[in-house]
Image (spheres, one colour):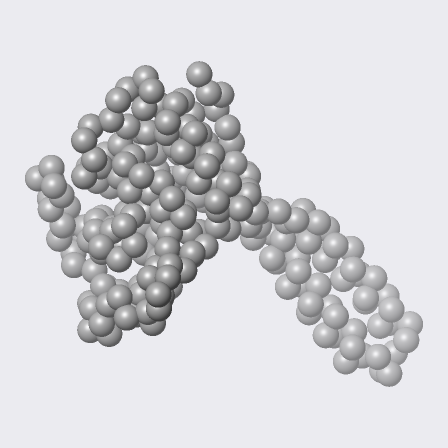
Length: 231
């Protein structure tokens, strides 16, 4: 039996350090500017603005959930400040680092791919805000496919604003923003072989190491509950 593991994303690292550093330096710069006068005013203003940006960046990092993933014996949970999703391990077909055909070889991408069996176990869990975030975050994947000749410019334009109706393999019909995500997942499967692609900024280690970690949980779950035949 595997213990529940919580993943703290790299994108959250140094949030407190940036915030405190910026807050400390701003009053120091004001004092320096007061005593030195006009001769360094432009430099002080520039440094003060830089400290404001540093503080804001730190605050944004701290606003993110402490954990991006929770891995349990039965589920993988994704956490985001606008929502989250959960998948049972027996609903996962394959996990690997995403790759794209380039020239005569494959180029590794900074994404971990998850191919799932049934969309109906995932789509209803998504909040509208999370769906919008995912659709926006995945746009570079479509642009990347265009650059490598995997899709045409016309397809890219159509897929950037997905169809508002989607019917799953299970016969469930989705409308609106949820349908757009269903169509996007189907397109990503055609392009990359995976339905969900997770950027490495949500991880706490190298993509290859995270893939090995997830595969360990998947194999452990499959040893107790043999999966259905792969799609």
